[in-house]
Length: 174
Ligand code: SF4
Ligand code: SF4
Image (cartoon, rainbow, N blue to C red; front, side):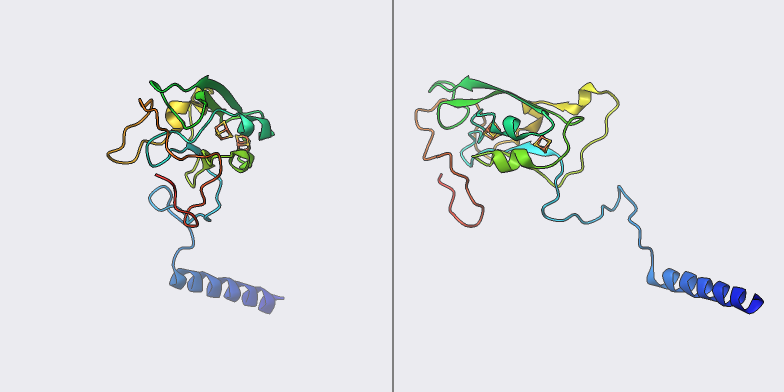
């Protein structure tokens, strides 16, 4: 009985020493963040084309695909004087309620232009419920360096189609 107890304590001591020799297995967040998988589904982002135009065309397919009813989209009409995206429409209002969102990524899958994507950033904490409703201004990424943002004054929205640009597979039209 005592021998078994001592053997058990010895095993514990061995594990303790070995663990200390191996070093810590924990991450001191936020100084060091645990590596995330490339397909991690974090906070959303609304992306642009390389000419600064917004990818979102206000079709609301993401909202239709959302099982949590977390996305609200209101479309507006593009004009040559005020163009936000290629084609006829853009998202005049785009909001996501992160308290409703279950981070499934269906919005990303449904989007025909690869506009809404889930990044590898951890969703932020907040003190008020309202702060979890993220607006288009918060979601939209800045234009590439040296490129104007939106709205743009252009009669040539370039060669954009509604097809998804596959990064690394096809050259994105300029
Ligand atoms: S990740 Fe899922 S739940 Fe969240 S907004 Fe997108 S479709 Fe809706
Ligand atoms: S994010 Fe994509 S699916 Fe949603 S409204 Fe914009 S273009 Fe349509």
